[in-house]
Image (cartoon, rainbow, N blue to C red):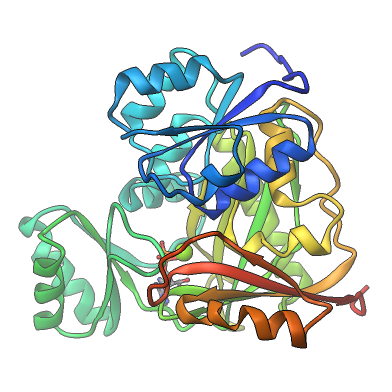
Amino acid sequence: MPFEPLQPGATIGIFGGGQLGRFLAIAASKLGLQTAVYAPEQDSPAFQVASQQFAASYGDEAALERFAKACGVITFEFENVPAATLEIAARHCPVRPGARAAAIAQDRIAEKRFLMEAGLPTAPQAVIESQDDMPLALAFLERAGRAILKRSREGYDGKGQKRVSSAGELKAAYAGFGEAACVLEALLDFSMEISVIGVRSLDGRMSCYDCPENHHKGGILHTSTVPARCPEKHQRLAKDMAARIAEALGYCGAMGVEFFVMPDGAAEPLIVNEIAPRVHNSGHWTMDACAISQFENHIRAVAGWPIGSVARHSAAVMTNLLGEDVLRWRSILADEPGSSIYLYGKSEVRPGRKLGHVTGISPLTDK
Ligand SMILES: Nc1ncnc2c1ncn2[C@@H]1O[C@H](COP(=O)(O)OP(=O)(O)O)[C@@H](O)[C@H]1O
Ligand SMILES: [Mg+2]
């Protein structure tokens, strides 16, 4: 595709209307770009800050065509946009990153295959596409002892996965997922989780922010901390692996790659957990601890503009406000005047729902 940077004033289309889309739209507006958000839910948080709203289903061809014709480039804030939707949009307007990155990341079986072909280490696993695969999966579980059954498609924030340690539990979990295709992964005793937020420009230059150390609660990200308490060489390796993934995908934009850091002496120091072909929750601290955030850099990349520095000027701790945590907004404002609070404009408080986050920064002591 020819290198055609967008002009200020042009419109960036965003599939998906959650908080990631909302931050992308805010970043675009800082750069003098308009945004059109396409999402099925009428009350999408990103609609509140976008220049144009398309509330329609992902299968609505007429709406998709109107949307794509209104945009200079289209991106997405979540990877589960149906492949057919991206294809229809791509007939009228460039989609960055492309449909291939979404197709791989929305299917764990395809994702693992892609990672293995790229020579990157993944958790030992067995694929269960149908009952025929159950004998092998049971033998795998017998060897592994403890494992996690993950639905191949439509899982996020720990949903669509179940820990299992016996044949009975595995069979029940598989039935519970309606016998949908799954990956059975050995439960790893990692020492830490880190991620890489990398940004690749349209002309193929890759930059990576420092790795945050991530802690989850019930499978949902709770805190991201930079610097991570993890050897520099591991962080370099993680960035290098993220760059290889982006290169293999011919990627454009921001990408999150999640890693398990294994204990000393393990066969592999790092295991790739999953790829998110979009801006990532574990990169929210870049809004406060870097001159140029992951959101602005994603917009710059898909607009065909040079990406900005990924350098970090502060240490940071980002804490998600999950479910009722958000009700503390008033005391956070009053008691933590140095913290930056973000509320996503979602009205319904549900347990585990991401409703906001808070980032505290402090001067660098690690460099
Ligand atoms: N193989 C594994 N071993 C140990 N913990 C795991 C494994 N896979 C996932 N987890 C835990 O569950 C979290 C969510 O799993 P993940 O595969 O990243 O799904 P999601 O799409 O919900 O983020 C991970 O960040 C990690 O804390
Ligand atoms: Mg994950």
